[in-house]
Length: 528
Image (cartoon, rainbow, N blue to C red; front, side, top):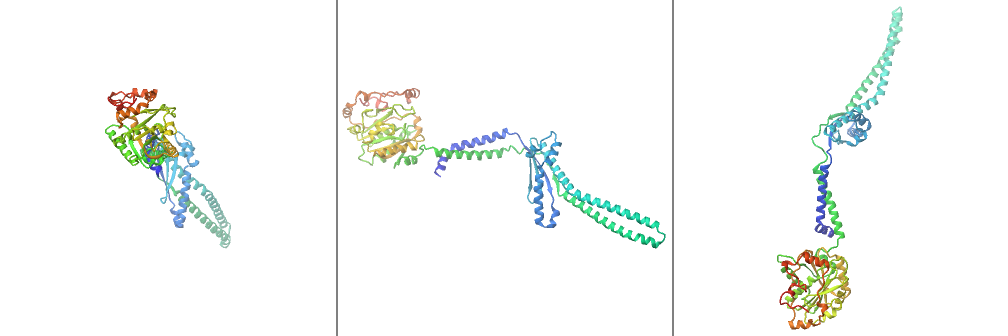
């Protein structure tokens, strides 16, 4: 159910797109497919002569005859004469694929339907096949009865000849006898034989009449009830049916594709996924950058995060803000938390870390640590040196994931707690889980996680508020140890230089050497 609901919430657009594609394909098929017409002729099956034998017998006879006539409609003896008489001539094998015969249960009606490209041809073929079925049925009945009728007819002819012979003998006996007694004696056996011959003749004639009646009844069993009429509209393509099939098919395929995408996609989309991946007790959702009061909402969010994750731990001095994956906005989150802490009256040092090959798609080859308040050594510094910095109540170190940063590993040894930063719809659960496991293996407690909206990445960078710093003289004393290497401006990569040229800061304001608008403003103290 989690996968199903996630697929509906996250990949509903796949299902919608597949549904639209299915509907478009169905409408396209409707426009491309040539029209097909159907003509239907109706045959009547009369089995009333079997009703006298019982209902079961009549029902079995009806079922048997229905199947027999349905098979006959697509047989060669029926289709060959139809194809021979059609103009242009057709093939019986191809015509059989266009013929459909079915019976209506309990009504004794058989429908013969024929599909064709033109309405007239469909009706003509359906009528021709129906008439040919009746004709073939009568021929088969005639062929079955003919031997018996021929035998009866031959018997009648033989008995008629016998009667005629007896009559001739009677006539000859009457003429040859001289007395009445002799005539009576001569014709008596002939009269008996004539009577017998006539009786046999009448019996055979009755059998002949019964056979003819039976033949007539059998031939009347099947007849054409209704001839096919010319159809007014095609049965295929049917736009409504095609649209329904396209919608159902596209929706089904889209839902399956969404399920598959949800199953294989492990990008973090909500705070619940981030909490599950990192095992964090608290997750903050924040948007970095934006307009229409987004800065105020962002500041309020970080104040809530600081109050929830840091203020309850009075002894916390060093916090590690680590990205769940390479490229997460740990620096902006660190500055936001520092600003929130500064509003609580804390003096905060933020160490931002910028990978040298940002945007290259590979792991960082080196790191340059730039400053927000002070500048720490990029390679030589370690966590102990950072924690030993005097004059600050809280030190926030922003690093990429432990597997990408050597400084992150050194910070872990002196860090009180860690905050994992992930980007919505960009960071993956396996990366966040891996970073959390590395932190736990090194003994660092995960105090919370921050889920940053990816939308903010496409907008201008928010203004970095200057954190509360110690007095000017104290700050200057702390900054005496910063050498020229620390104060040297980070050289931007070609991709970053091109991005700065194509997308200047809002209002046309130049970015100063520190990379921070607040620290570079007139009158602000600049480290080094």
